[in-house]
Amino acid sequence: MVKKLTHVDEEGRINMVDVGHKAVTAREAVAGGYVWMAPETVALIRAGQMKKGDVLATAELAGIMAAKRTSELIPLCHPLPLTKVKVRCRLEASGVAIEALARVSGQTGVEMEALTAVSVAALTIYDMAKAVDREMRIGEIFLKEKRGGKSGDWVHPAVKEGENE
Image (cartoon, rainbow, N blue to C red; front, side, top):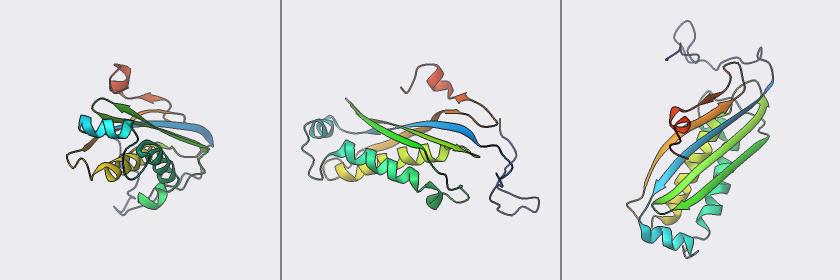
């Protein structure tokens, strides 16, 4: 279901949504993504043999840092006083699964923060491994679920079906 665009005013001009009238509520979002890579690259990461250092720990830190700066990267995104950001990168046979959780007590959601965390974590993995694997692919970045706010809780259908976990 596509709703009316809230970032466009009555005159068709770009507009930052006024959330001042909204109640402060606990909100949470979880996003996921994936970096596909060659088995040899996975093996190097697992063995801690990447020349740039600990790929997964660096990507997790980069994701946390990015979530905190989302409003500087995404136009019209409100700056939020995040109360929690957690990024986890899990090495698998075909690459790295990434999941990010963002929380806030605020007047607007944290979906963009979670998605930004995953995106930057994926880019960091790519950057750290590109010297050994130029064929890596980044994808499947999506909002898995959100909780709180006026529209309530939501879970992506793929997560409900047990996919992408």
